[in-house]
Length: 318
Image (cartoon, rainbow, N blue to C red; front, top):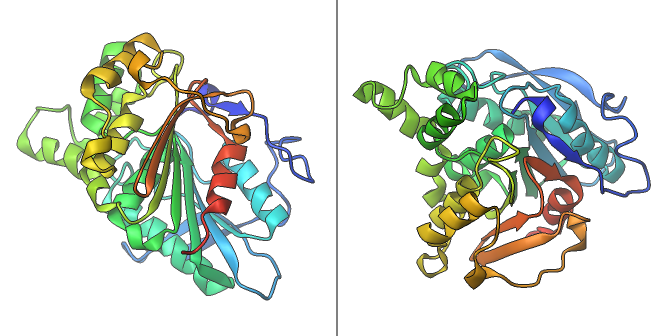
C-alpha cells in the first residue's frame, strides 16, 4: 500500500527506541546487490549482518504494494535485527506492484529466494530460524512465499494481506481505488477479459498456493476496520486462514461477511483475549488451527511491530 495509508503502531519498547526516527536506516544496514536466479540480474536489497560468530536468525522483510526495498516502514524491522544481532535482508523483488515483472511473478518468487541464499552465503545464519514478515502488499508476498516455498521458512507473519487478486480488483474497483488499475496492468487486463488474463490472476494470487503451507508456522493479522478506513477488507485474512486450517476450524462465509460489513466480531465468535504485545490494539478474535493462527485486532490497515516480531522470535526450532 501507499506509505501514507499505512498506520504505524508505536507500541514497541526495547532497550533502544525503535521509533525515534523511522526515516533513517540504522548505520549498520547497507544497500547491496545480489544475483537473482530468475534471470541472472542483479537485484537490490538492504542488508545487515552482525559480527557474532555463532549462528543467528535471519529476518526477511518484504515491502508493501506501492513501495520498494528502501521504504520507511521496514526500518523498525532492521532496528530490531541490529538490537538482537539477527541477520536482516529487505529485497526489492521488482519494486512496486504495478507491472507484470512484479506482483507475485516468477521473478518475484526467485528474487526473494535468492535474497535468502545471499544472506546465507554472506552471514552465519541458523537455518532453523529463517523468518519472513510483511504488511499489506508485503503481507501478500509473504503469504505467496509461504505457499510457494514453505520449506524455506521457520515462520511467516503476514499483516493486513491481500490473498486473492481478482477479488481485490473487484473491491478496489467498487471503492474507486487506484490499485485496480495496477492489478490490471500486472495481470494483463481486467478479470474476465480473456482466459490468459484470468490465468494470471490465479497464478499471482497467494490463495492459489496456501494449501501447500500447512507445515510452516503462519501468523495472519487483520485490523477490524480495514477495508473501511484502509484498503484491504479483512475477508482476505480470513480466507487465508481458511485455506490453511483444518476443515473443522474454518470460519463460515456468513461470519466473514459479518466481520467485513459490520466491523464487529459475530456474536457466536466473541471471547476475551489477552495479548500484551498488541498494546492498545485489543485482540478481538483469534483462532488457531494446526500451524496457523489468525488474529483480528482493534485497528485498521497497519502492523503492530511488537506483536509481529515477538511472535516470530517465539517460533523456535521444534
